[in-house]
Length: 536
Image (tube, rainbow, N blue to C red; front, side, top):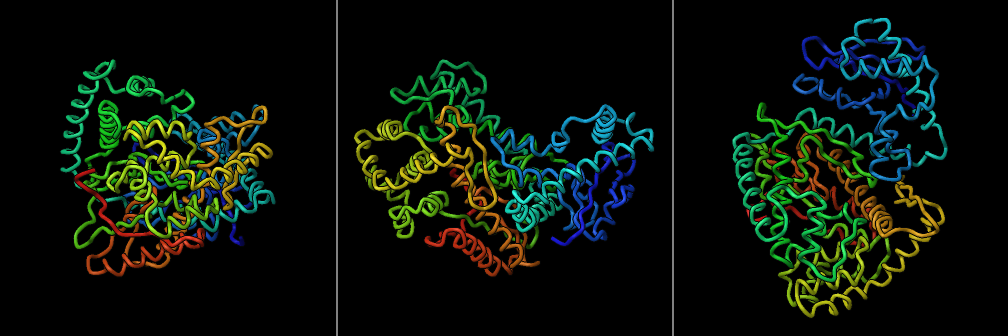
């Protein structure tokens, strides 16, 4: 990396009465005050503290977001090895890296942070404010340069500049330009979801011991225990409770009602975050939103809207949406990273979930349930528990499910080897500069840790593929189309109607190339489909 590196901060005027001020720390510790229009003229990367506040300045400004802007938190989060999602969030807080400071240093950092978050009193004395900014940015510079020059972080640093920084720029542009939506449909959806939620909560209360309120995780667990026998759900699996509800929804009418409550509540929560004061949604996008590196949209969480409610988004006049996703994405990645010949053969030759549905439940009409069963198996649910869930779906299916899963015994052996490695080193690495730390006690791993380890291997690889696909598309499409929304394993694109076929082909090829580059033994399964549906 030959570019110069600068460090900067924004003193944002939240009231919008005065212009926000941007300060860049010069090479000789002098402070340069500038504005968003001149950032592109600086030759080098400008690392900002908490760049979402900066991104907000570009919204509605008609100034293009410059490609030389970087985020300190994103760099630290990419480079450092995290133990959990919470640790991942903490790693974005550069202040914790400063360590123990002298009293004068603590005072300067405190003054800076107060001013940064809008304290008028901390902003009154200009000389004191700029001194605090210089101190803070100098400390941040020392920490960041220390990470960049640490040979232990060389692979992660390369990943940052080759991939994550480019993805950050792409989605910063998206945050600034926004996503068009129909305000009237949003209002209608809110009303519909409120009615659906009330009806579902009432029905759930009538058929369980729960009161007429939105259930918390303990309430959900209580319903699962009431409605299932012989299936154990412990507090260790509380973080997976909604996935368990989704898995069991087809096996029990009350759990299906609980699933409707969960979905309606989640969708309504998102829709209430959507302001109807403008024609665009400008979400905050975290390009390393999880320990596995997945891209997450926040405020609002558009990726989590159910398919039948996605019709709120619109492409604009003369434009169309193009939507493409990876089919059997996680199953394929598992087959590749575990080198399971049986799974690779099944994936390349057909549909893993349809095969499970046909072999275990008699035909392919149960594909959705079969997919949930297989994903639960992938991420570590015990076969005895899976068998009981399967029996709840269709009596007599347990033995057929065990037989189907037995064909992938090499995956179980692969998992055990991965667990042994983590017990020895305390780390799991996805091979692409992303690793996760585990606190191993008494030479053994908890079930929760085992699930997280396999997730890191599979989803870490999947998120890497997805980001390569985004970069491939962005570089190949030019001005012919743009990304409107990243889903978890799919991309929504906007293009002129006359370019729909051309841009669609570029999208499919970009996604296929990315998949093939990481999983060379697999035949990429990428297809275009409808972005929203009325029956999901």
